[in-house]
Amino acid sequence: MSQSDRLGDSALNSSSKTGRHNRFNRTCRDAIAAKATTSVILGDKGDGSPRSRAAALQRYAWANDGHVTDIIEKHAAHNGNHICYESKCYTPLKIKASDNLGNGTQSGGGSPSTAHGHLVAFGCTEESLLREIRGCQARGSPTERAFAHDTGLGYVAARKGYYDDAIANKGNTVVALISEEFGGVVPVVTALLRRLEKKAVADGTRYGANSTRNFVSHHATAMSFAIVTGVATAIVDGVSKLETRMWPGRRPATRCTEPKL
Image (cartoon, rainbow, N blue to C red; front, side, top):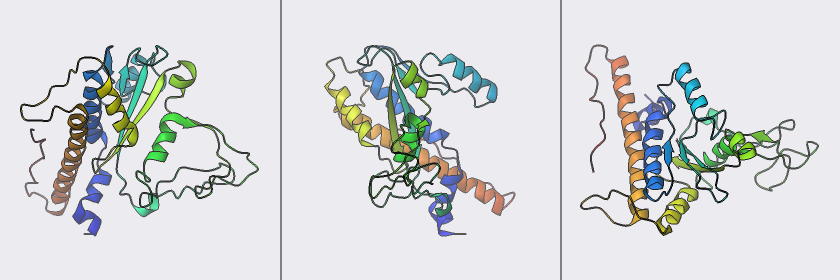
């Protein structure tokens, strides 16, 4: 058994991201809906089967064709169109072989780095996810060397993201809500909470009897709590599966359930 197994990293990396993603996504939706003046829709991808996924793609194609939007705030953008929110909850703790140093190739140009978390916050996740979500425009010339992160110079090939249709064809606004397994969120998320707090409308947040009444503190705490409990559940489930493989017939550890605030 390796150190990664003992710390739970192996169990987390091999688990599905759906559980912690869904928890984080719902807390984002709660914060947006609390200050919304239009409809807020939580995207439903179904049960994961090909048939339900195809139905979901068709059902939400009016907001973005080709990818189901996590949260849609209807007619809330400055131009009167929709705001499409894509939430992500990823781990920066990956096996070394999966790291991308961002060196790119001569033919394909620069690539996002997934190995700079020790130098910059979210350096193992954010850049790659932003390209997946929003895509990127071409930069430089194919005759140049691939883009270098240390100089900011070089060639980057154009690439379409999940929300190319929403941005290019429908004129919708796309917001990437990115988080990591330790409960941290990118500045875009905290900026969104501060903007919502200042919004001059009634606050629909359901505060607890003994909880803070500060909008930002309440929802930021809820987001981090959702992430870390989702991670804990994934680790406990992974340990249970490992116990079953190591000691067949032995009753596995009790499945982790979300504690109540």
